[in-house]
Amino acid sequence: MEDLLSWYGALIGLFVAIFLILKKFNPVYSLFFGAIVGCLIGGADLSKTISIIITGTQSVMGTVIRVLAAGVLAGVMMQSGAAGTIAQAIVKKMGEKKAILALALATMVITAVGVFIPVAVLIVAPIALEVGNKMGISKLALLLALSGGGKAGNIISPNPNTIAAANGFHLSLSDVMIGGFIPALFGLAMTVIVASMIKHRGVMVTDKEANLISSKTDDDDQKRPPLSKAIITPVIAIVLLMVNPIGSILNIEALSHFKLDALYVLPFAGIVGMIAMGQKNKIISYTTSGVEKMTATVLILIGAGAIAGLIGASNLSMEVVKLIDISGISGTFLAPISGILMAAATASTSTGVILATGTFGTAISQVGLSPLASAVMVHTGATVIDSLPQGNYFHVTADSMHMSIRQRMALIPYEAMVGGTMTIVATIMYGFI
Image 1 (spheres, rainbow, N blue to C red):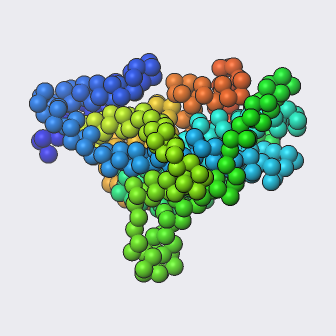
Image 2: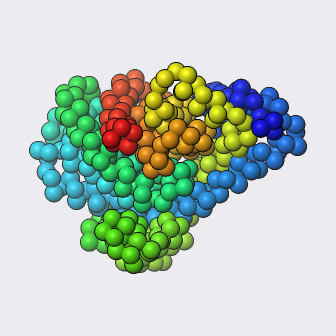
Image 3: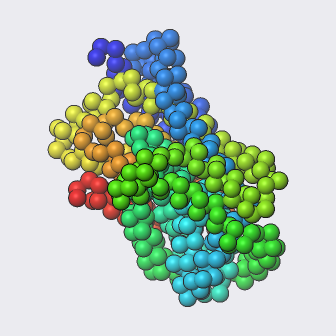
């Protein structure tokens, strides 16, 4: 007990890291610097500080290798045009009269099958601008449909944020994906309702913007694979990830013992899909692209591991539990609140989940929540205010819809309503029922 660092050292280290991130310093170095400051203030000498940081970074290596493995699937879906094919098929099938639902569902589906949410928005945005121009739907409503649908898909996806939530509470990826399904449906419904209410509010899509998009989309369509081949990668990934949970639900022993980790499933699905689309000669370029897209997340994971090492070596989690007991607030709220705060600080769902599980994971476990409840509540909480201007998602999505900073800022409260709905549903389902 006497070897533990002081809780205030851990808190100061965390605040230093968040402050530097908000000031737009490199997030990885911010996290490492915060961890070092926290260790030294908390009572560690230079040698022990290094030991704590190394222990912390080692603790996230399981998540790191799974995130890198997911890069194969992400690279194939994005580079091959498969994600765009799926999005267009959904919008065409549902028709322009159900445009908002179609756009939200398209973004949800391609995010759910392993495409990063900013990339999913970029893929669907040209379709949204065309439809919005024809149907008289504002950019504000269009981007809410894309962003809200993406948020819903993100909590049931094999993306880094879900992998981090699963590994943070020692669960399989498929458990967390299934656990987020009902909150995701509520998130989709809220997206459609709110976007429909504001479809005449804000700036409209101009004819010039729509014409530019239309000519570019025609060129892209010729390069995309047919739908029958585009869905092979996500179908294989989902089927293999769901074999074990389905076996457990149906009490089929052979299936319940068939445990395939995401480390195997995601690259396998990506490679098989690549071959099916006749793109086997592009395996190097697709996998390279996938790894490059995962590099920033992996580096942040390692930095977050350093902060997790600091928190784990301190008595902060015990103090948090004591504070909850004294205040009389239900400990159930610690999980979603930690996700909300960390994602808001970093303006990133995945980084928010990584920090929340690393920082508050032990404290959340001590208040009596099950690992699945903890993971889903942290995960949904991280979608509430994760699109603030200090993160790249804010700017990528604004550019995709040709919106100014001020116009994009107006969307944040509506996005928070979608994330808040998913968080409330998850908290009721897993915390109180």
